[in-house]
Image (tube, rainbow, N blue to C red):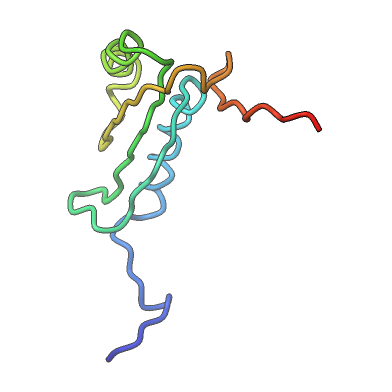
Length: 107
């Protein structure tokens, strides 16, 4: 059994590529209810960074069906990106797209 340390880790992605991917994700973060994951390990193709966006839309099929074409128009030029769009269950987001806390019980 071989032990390794952090000093032995040689990432495929360089810092500049990770920084560029993060900078390209910022406009999406500002415009959408989204989770962004930057993957930097086991990404075979250069620049060895893949961005995964998970966008949550308003409840209902209309918002869900409209989301992908709208995202493509606004952010389709982001390279090395994967997109997932999911609809929020009815009533679980507030007007700003934030998750609501369950109501508190009196007493």
